[in-house]
Structure formats: C-alpha cells, structure tokens
Image (cartoon, rainbow, N blue to C red; front, side):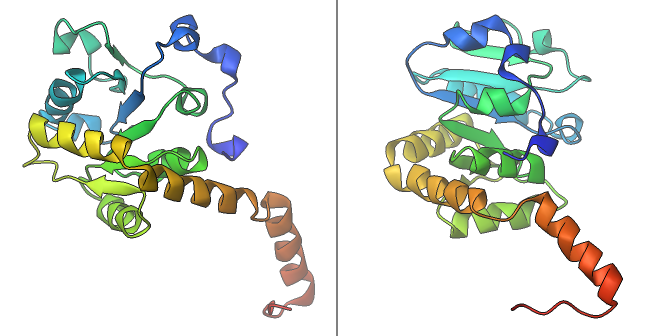
Length: 198
C-alpha cells in the first residue's frame, strides 16, 4: 500500500491485534464521512457477521460510541479507529461503503470485499470491484443481516475473489511510483508540450 495513504507502523497497533485467533478476520468500515449517515447499517452488519465463525473488527469513527452497540460476543470488536494498513495485513475480507481509501487499501493488500455503497463515488467503485471479480455488492437500505452473512460467507468460500484481488495487488506493485510522476511533471514544465508515450 502506498505509504502516503497510511504511514502507520505495525508497532502502532493495539496488542490484541497481534494475538488474533486462527479464524478468518473480517474488517467493517464505513469510512470517515459516512458513519453518521448510515442509519442502522452498522447494527445490521454486526448482527449478521457476528454470528459467523470469524473475528469481526469494526471501526465506527470518532462521532459514534462503540458502547452504543451494546454487549457483543467475544469474536466482535468495535473501536473508534485503528490504523488501516497494519489492520488489513491481518484480514481476510473487508466490508466497506466503497470509498476510495477503503477500496484501495483492501486491494493493495489483496483482500476481497463486500461493498455496501451509499453515495459519492461509492456506487461506481462498487460496480468496478464487482466487474473485476473482487467483490459482492449489497444495498445499504435493503440488506438484511442474513443477506450480509451470506455475502460474506460466499466471498470467503469462493477462492476466485481472493485470487482476483491478489492479481490486482501484484499489478499495483508493478506500477511506477510518485518519483515517475514527478519526472513527468518536470518534463512537462520544461518542454511545455504534451508528453507522448514512447
């Protein structure tokens, strides 16, 4: 994952994250803007996935109190925020609203998704993820806990989702980095004409 997107180090994460049980780990995030606009979506997803034999880690942002969700089973952990990059290195699947940060983060780590888009660029991102074979899409208003659970079960059970996400991660690693973009911008400024592919 590009360091600029999440510069957190592994020693910045809570100690409990280094001792996760040997079962699939699912991360639920609705990003930094949309949690307050999500209605009961957190509760529906937590209800559906919390019953599965997985570890569910949820971040709800600074405006929502994790205690508002009441007592949870031992396999569910709800936090305000956790550094995304080190968390994703422990995950098997991401449930997300389809925001650019969570999608890029998941795919950079080769993780498949269940996407529940609510607005902005999220529906487009969700459709693109589906077309690339890395995600299933759910409706944020209509999705029931059972439907969320079934989508998560299907994505975890079908290797093609993880394989497609892994291919994208490897392709991303092969792309030029920021230094290449800087070089192109410097050339553009110096030559004052369009840069054509050579």
